[in-house]
Structures are given as structure tokens and as C-alpha cells.
Length: 393
Image 1: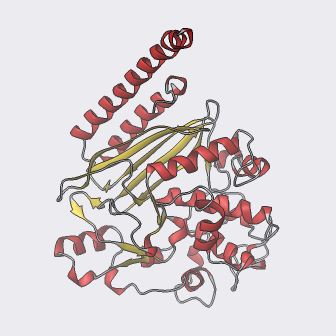
Image 2: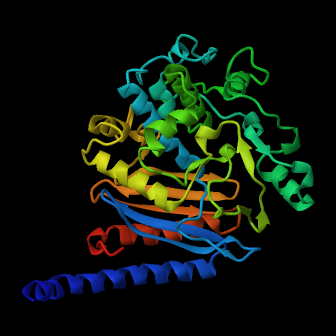
Image 3: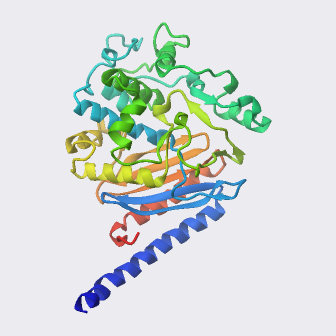
């Protein structure tokens, strides 16, 4: 009897207060979803122990009136690069590579900045976007659209005008050949303008292909495909059963349709898939982020605590605000992403060790950036109230 009374007096008020916080957050996000142009999105708030809140809003498929839930899966664009960072640290732990190695020690072809031919480009340079490489106009050739000729004229026109120019002419290549064509002197699309006229390691320039080159290096160093290495070292140990890559096929019946404005987009395979084609939901990725936060706080899990510290510490130059494929600012660590029909955010507070995730299935509306940031600001505000979220979530 006394134990029951103690529970009522101590835990019940906290439970009620926590539920009010949850209801308040749901109410705010519902209101935003009803007034903005985002067709569907899901969110999560996590700490180093668990997912504290996860919910979907709007539609994963507007035409079918299918709701977007916390279990809805979709590509997450450039947040995928954080997996490259984790994979690099794991490969370094296994003694397969060192971040300060020359990339040409591993690549099956040479990449040399023509403006600084004697300058070494390291793996760390790739991971901090200080490699001196630029994404070329040929980057859009990485997108392979299935059954392009069967798409509506509206969809074909939109894709060609906004995302991949002559999509129908894109052909499947290996990652190695795609990168070689751009940056190797013998490559079909090679130009000196694919490189910066800045010494390696002195200038920050975000380049998607940095992640793809790092993935190729992981393959060469480990003897495994990048997707297999990630599955073995990251997704399988974390039981991310609703996560894979676009090219690996469906993993769930609850898959989001992607929209550019109101135009439904077709499934698109990405030759350079490590840089942006990871498919997941906020539950799987929430568990991943929780693991990252606990690692940052000093816990050994899929990586050693020392690896987390290195990966999530500003590298080379504090002005770059870059860890190893993770953005590291004064307050937040994480990454954002944007691609055709995909807008995503995943960050955690360095001091409070609480993070948030936003996955949306809409891009290219006039107000999308402001609407995304409005949701992000709400999540940031609630994430700072982590102690108010209790185990009832």
C-alpha cells in the first residue's frame, strides 16, 4: 500500500506533466502540417538512452490519402554522409586505413589537383570537405530514373529542368568509373575546373563526391562493398531492420512518395549512393542517433569512445565547422539533407545530449525552406526540455 501511494505521489504527477508536453508538441506540429506546403513528414526527439518522441504528420502518399507515420521510410539525402563518417572510423579502428593517408594509396585511379600537383589529398580532407574537389555539372548523371519514358510529361519536364537535365540519357556506371570520369585525367568528363585553385586543407567547399570517394576507399581497404560494410558494422548491430539503400528494393509497405512541389517523383537510383541514398524512418534513425549521442558522451558501442570524439570534433580549421562527415558547430552536431522530394535534418545538442530528427517528402515549393526551419525551431525548443520526457513515451 505504501509503495502504491509513493508511486502515485511521485510518479503520477510527472507522468501527467510529460503527457501534457507530448500533447503540446503534437498540437504545434499538427498545426504546422495543416498550414504549410509539406505533404508529409515525421519527427523524433532522442537522448543517449532512447527515443523520447516519434510521430508522423500529413501524407506519405497524398493521392492515396496514406498517412505519414513514424514508421514511414524514405531516402534521407545527405544525412547519409554521417554513415560514411562512422564507417571510416570503424575501418580505422580495424586497422584498414588511417584518416591521414593519401587517398591515392587506395584508389584504383589517381586524383591529383592540377593546380597543386605535389599536394597530398588525405581521407581527412575528403571527410572535412577541404579536399579541393568540386561537384561538376556531370553530377546530375548519377541519377538513374526507372521507366523514364512512362513518366508524365509534367514529371519529365520538372526533373530535366530542376534535377538531372537529360535524365533519359543517364546510364548505369560503377562508382569507380563515375568518379574516375570526373577527376582522373583519363576520365571522359575530366576538367581542371573540377578542382579548386586553393591549397588542399585550407578551404572549405562542400562536395558530394567527397563521400563517394571515401566509400570507394572503404571498399578498397576492407575488400567489402560499402553497403555490406555498413550493414555489418552499423545497421545490423543497431537492429535497423527498416533501413537500406534505394537500389536494394522495398523494405516496407509504408514508403513515402516524394514530391517536388505537387509533382510526384519516380523512384531514382543513385550511382553515388553513399552520399545521399540511405532509406530509413525516424524510429530506426532515432536509435542510430541515440547511439551516436551516447558515443559522443563517452560510451563505447559500435565505435570506441575515442573514435566518436575524433569524428565529432572540429577538424583542421574551426571555421569549417566540420567533423568527419558530421557538421560540428558551437552548439549542435549532426547533418541536414536535400534532394529531389527529400528534405531532412538530424542534430543533437552537444551540452544537453538531446537530439531531433525531421524527415520530409516535399521540396521546391516557394516557402519550403522557411517551413522546414519553423518545424526545426519547434523541435529544438522541445529538445531542450528533455528531462520532461519520461519513460511513458
